[in-house]
Image 1: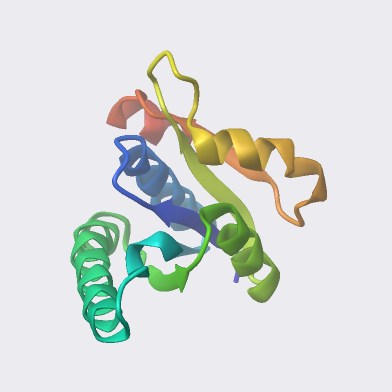
Image 2: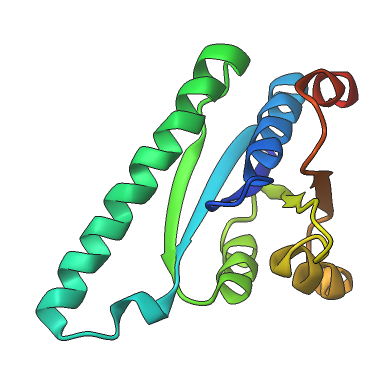
Length: 151
């Protein structure tokens, strides 16, 4: 089954990327894999404190993911998978694509402010020629209705 890989983060544009991935998966019989990345700098503490912080980060991710997962299951009849990796975002996204041969498309949300589309979109589009999957960049300010029409 072809999967749409989408990155879960705290950005506003993440919502449209999730919606797009779920709607495309629903319309094409695919799946959704949600990738959350814990940056390594969150754990530069003593070992015991680092383990507690890692567990708390995973719990926050799972709660955040469940909001999207419930919507995907209820509205799109798609059951997403959650993958949590630790490391630098760009490296972990590329590693996940390499590790899972079912990933067919990487879906990213583009920021809408004057700073540009965002660091992930910028970095990954520079490497688009070397990735084994296409990238779909979803504008962060598309309405739900427009997303439905596109997918």
